[in-house]
Image 1 (cartoon, one colour):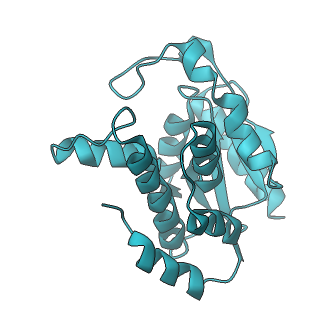
Image 2: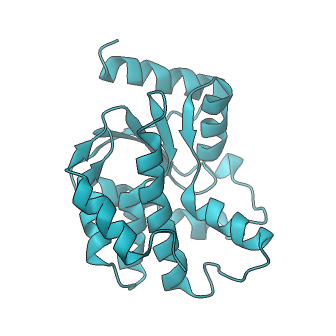
Length: 202
């Protein structure tokens, strides 16, 4: 079961010309590098935030007693994550700008290719049509703050392996990257807001 299904997803793509939402900012990077903490802090300031799709799907499936996960039915899981990202992009268009995304669509497709999974042509089209702001913020691997939990079970070394592929999935299709400094959460929030103000000419 997917969020859209091919027919509904096709309808979304047919009604949507290429969109470049300059107020949509992706925050991506290494697992455990403070990305989600930063997003929560931005949300606490009243800014529009979109949570990470993969984690949202896992939590919902667990609460429903389901078994869909990254180690079981990987193709179905990733399809659902991609479609959740597409739906989030649509939903974000009604939110007050700027909107900050915890990861984005391009890296989902990049990881699917890396894993040898099938990437539906509709997903490729959605990624090409639904563009974020040209600058993507990147949290680099940060071993000093890396913590394992129920969702993050891999060692730091294993979790960091996907970092280069994550960043490349954006760079390869024309996005610029801006590395986040390794500073406190409040300082990171200030850095992000300063960068956004500069990018938007505020």
